[in-house]
Image 1 (spheres, rainbow, N blue to C red):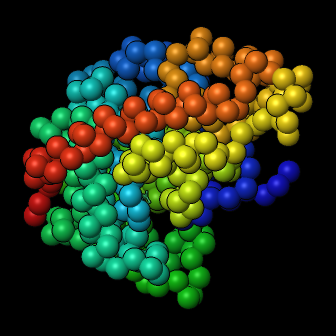
Image 2: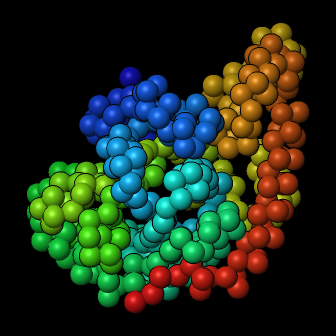
Amino acid sequence: MEEFVVTPWEVHGAIDYFELVERFGTQLIDDELSKRLKKYIGDHQMLRRNIFYSHRDLNWILDKYEKGEKFVLYTGRGPSSNTHLGHLMPWFFTKDLQEAFDVKLYFQMTDDEKFLFNNELKLDDTRNLSYENALDIIALGFAPKRTKIFLDTEYANVLYKIAVEVAKRVTFSTAKAVFGFTNSTNIGSIFFTSMQSAPAFLESVLEKKNVPCLIPCAIDQDAHFRVCRDVAPILGYYKPAVVHCKLFPSLAGSDKMSASLPQTSIFTTDAPKTARKKVMNAFTGGAVSVKEQKEKGGNPDICSIYQYEYYLFEKDDDKMKELREKCKRGELMCGEHKQILADKIEKFLTAHQEKREKARDKIEDYMLRD
Ligand code: TRP
């Protein structure tokens, strides 16, 4: 089996998600836990399809909740580019969690991270991108009363104090072991994990009492929260619970939709016609000729069009099954399926972009400031 790598800053190879759970020491969301969640969030396709599939201490946080102790949600975005559709996937789920449990959400914009880890971006760039990305979050309809967004460099008065408490309890050898840093890594990058840990304790700090925290994130972010959870009891806080999703596939058919390859990602800011073109050029599981595909059928398991439907656009399992069967029987040709998906994406983008523009006037309702 080909080696695969999953860290917060590097994802490549064919990911074995079960093996990741072993590597990272997380738990699979089993049937029992799925049922437990269903009571709150309903029959959610991201749970049914194991898109959110792994966790840490989710049962514990539900126990607390059921005894009347509310938690807060915390997630974030590394503003290195405009938002693409893959980024929205965990945000949709986070919004559904927020509504199901009626809880607050803290949304971190790591403008510092994307400056520190990227040679091309200036701090001004990551700051501007943070505000652009915030428009997408607002456009998804998060309630302003209980959703707070902040930038690391702008909410520093509160965050930095928490981050240094964390940083004091994390050694360089831990950071090297967990993240693979070397002697030539810049020292900002080494410190950064304490900035990503800090919001897990934010509500406890602001409320001056211990408040449980649940972090929905893609599994590549888990390393930060392993460090965070080790430090939590030393600081007298609860360990944050985590719920992990798989990484969103790209139009090129690889494992994670990477914004560094713009032609294989669809951005929320793409003109609907541009998005359509990207879909029409996407990698599929089709055969070399129409004739052969009609005879032998296509392969949905490696097809990026199919993956888009599965992860984001087709929530109905029966329809999903029909698409799959028709593809495999050679009845649904790639060109036709691309058109179907392109229509859905165009429709989504048109509506989203309208809400996104309106969000410009609402930003201050969401921002958390010192
Ligand atoms: N580091 C994340 C990224 O690059 C952004 C982030 C910050 C985050 N805090 C988080 C993601 C909490 C998930 C949960 O995208």
